[in-house]
Length: 504
Ligand code: UD1
Ligand code: CA
Image 1 (cartoon, rainbow, N blue to C red):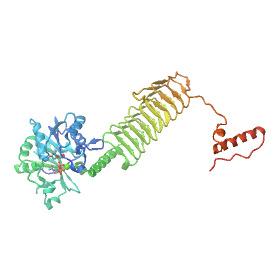
Image 2: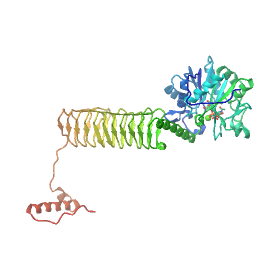
Image 3: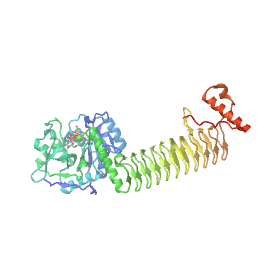
Image 4: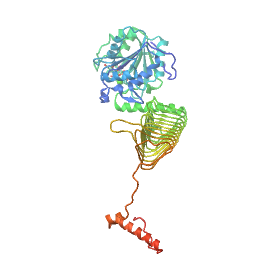
């Protein structure tokens, strides 16, 4: 029997195993979802993705994932996130022990230590797994189980220790006595065990329990009875081992994961103004001296450089924000925001948006597939789609890049230092040359040469007296008549009653 050990999360080191087995075939009934439990996302990965990431540094030759409930979706996801992993089908969910046996049967030549882990342990950290594996190796155990001391052990397997402190058995809550239920040390559902010993013991476990399932946890008691060395490692942070069985637990795990990410960022020098409303995926990166304002979400592979200010109320997905840029009340997908750029408030940057140094995207502007050069500005109320804009150019307010003819998308090119008027339409494909101007209200359908002024609007025509004739008796007509009388009076040098201002 091996005495307990306490893991040190920072101690990683070259711990390794021959294989990783993830048990992920269970129904996840309590999630009440058409999505398999292990595919529910939190903090930028699926639950399964987090478990695989924690095991990844072990560098195992084989990774086996037992799939069952919703298996095609799980297999598809696995092919995307871990193409090297081997999905193994457990046709009927006859318990975690049965699942482990099915996994080992799929890799018959496997020998040596195997990490077994429940697929619903999204807070598990690589350092904790490494410490478990390391302890297993150092102590020469046949099986080592990760445990934790928790305040609310309800629903979890309890760790039964002998007088010498060694682990003797795991008892599931439904099979536990009142005395056993009072135990606060629980089974995390993460184990390292020798492959051969596992095969032998798994062949012997029954389903004589409350749930009528083959419990993996029974392996432990069998090994102890054989006199095999069995150990336990208490996780330094009990959060590491928390499972996830329903949506409330999912929300709680998501919050814990986010707290960890934000704590790491703040320790590294990032200002997080309101950790309660700031969400950063584990896959995002933020450099020191960046500022995250309240209501900010940094998702996917988003990267924020030093000196940048993001938020308030901003969501960035797979977006790059370079040094010193500000992004205020914006929603950005796969955009590249260059150094010292200003975005927002109320901007929508869609995939393929690239903003050069000191460019500006102002209020109520949407961009897509748009390469906007250094120092260029799209300050107000515009749509810029499928466009290249040079440097130092200003796009007038309320401009639309008309990129779609109903069938195909077309490109617009605007040169350097151009000044386009307010309320322009650029009907693509079209090019506006360097230094060109366009008049306000123009619909630009032909190319504009460099330095030219393009005017593409009907000339103005005033129909005198129209309101008096066609809208007599209206306030407009009365105002017009009063204005005419004043004009006549001033022409004749008379003084008229002063004009009344707007009606209140
Ligand atoms: C399990 C442990 C319990 C531990 C808890 C930690 C058992 C018997 N009990 O309980 O001691 O405290 O995890 O969270 O293992 N699975 C399959 N095929 C099956 C059944 C389950 O692949 O036929 C997978 C599930 O997808 C899950 C894992 O095995 O990832 C554990 O199964 P689950 O039903 O969630 O066990 P718990 O009751 O949570
Ligand atoms: Ca579980």
